[in-house]
Image (cartoon, rainbow, N blue to C red; front, top):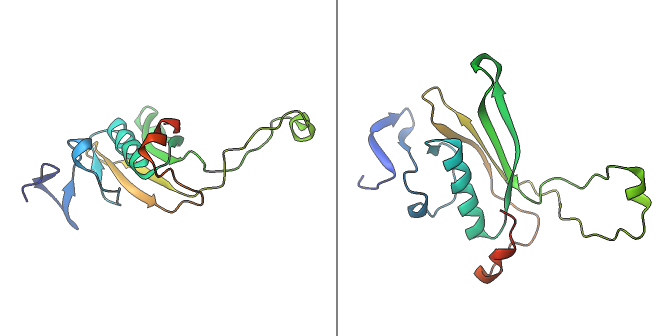
Length: 146
């Protein structure tokens, strides 16, 4: 194993643990079990994957451990089109002059990462399927939010 992404000294029950040392050299999609040095590296990796694939992401939620001084121990990153628009006020529902395009389509694509006991961040869930059209042209990627 001569890949810069695999540390041979670290073995898991299911095989080697992959560590993302250089985000640019890992061009593949995420998978369950993939590990990162920290949450920022995980976000950067998923954002790079999203840009390459043709969608943008957002942080949907995070989880804090009460026993560990409220530090973030989990992160949920979703496609920016996840969920549905909910009007904040009743006037927004009936306001005819507010003709805006809603960007949420209920897309289910997401990734969930959790901090392990060793302090690394591990992908625990990955859903790849989108229910909307993805941007297929690199020249249009500048229109993506993330």
